[in-house]
Amino acid sequence: MAKTPLLTKEKSPKATKAKKPRRILSGLMVLTMTAITLTTAFSPERVTAQADVKRRSRTVMYVSDSADLPLTDASARNIDQINYAFALLDDGEATGDHWQGIRKMKSFLTRHPEIDGVLSVGGWGADGFSQACRTQEGREVLAGSILRLMDEHGFVGVDVDWEYPGFSHAGIESHPEDTENWYDLLALLREGLDERERQNGRPYLLSVALGAGKSLLESIDAARLNELVDQAVVMAYDLCGFEKITGHHAGLYPDSDKADTGAHAVKMLTEGGMSPGKILLGIPTYGRMWRQVASDGNGLGSRAETTGNKVVPYGEMQALEGSGYTRYYDEDAQSPWWFDGGRFVSGEDATSLQYKARWVSENNLGGVALWAANHDPDGEAVKVLTTHLK
Image 1 (tube, one colour):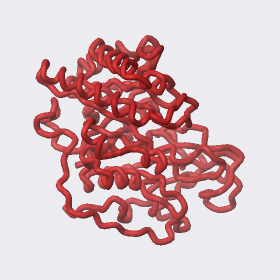
Image 2: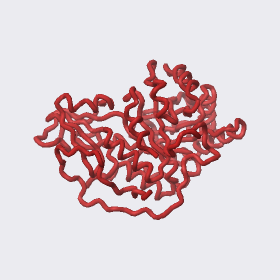
Image 3: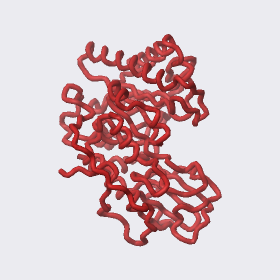
Image 4: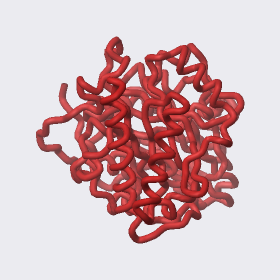
């Protein structure tokens, strides 16, 4: 199969033709990847109970803890791994004392042993990493508590969501040594997981969530990270929405003035030494809505009275055309949006998901990671993705 270069795109076969938006790109450079030997996220010795799954790419679903977990037995066939979010940090140790749905989560995983259950620690606004990791003793205490919590609840891996080492964007404490301390924390977790693998005869996964922004990725040594982790989730969403100008919050490709996109983040990691097969493209199951948009056109790139702070679940987005919205599709960014003259919604639909699935497969990435099941309880987004992943 001819491989689609990381920043090259084809026209989507199902793109809506009703209204053609202005072209966003002013001459996207087509980059040709040099031939490299690609490794998969799970080498033969690390394959779990997925031997009967024909597709190479893995689907990872984040599930945010709640009393009413949005999981059904019917959706299990489309999921290879669940990242249970989130354990938090309390006085330097990981805790799940706040969890409401852990019993249901464990029951679901028991019924579906083919799905790997992974413990996610941290999340946006979760403080305590910087403080706990500032000393060797603190890192050992934190790593030990994470591994104990994983063992206690029968998870088979850890996903570290420190958002983000060295940055205080989410209102958390940060320190200049955070990134180095992050590597050390991951090394301790890797050591503990490998020891469990030797003892129990099955693989244990170490995952890390990464921001897709250029400034965040520039501080990471991708080759060093590659030696430590099995998976690197590129959170290629929320790329805009915090300002009062409408745009694509999960566009795959960059537009003329914004390089923070999924493809660009993946390119930075692979050029820095990350194995493509360890990268999971993060995909949102929600959209972002701007309101009171000043535009007499299609609404894209227009000023609004609000930021894109309103979240729209996947199913609601797909029904917008029946409630006064017009759907548009940007073939440059491979991203849809909906506009009703005053409200602008950016997100995903079947066309963009199909394209992303094909792009992931053709570039030999490890798979996709969706945030989160809670925004798509019927599992429609992951169903589209698994249909087109190889």
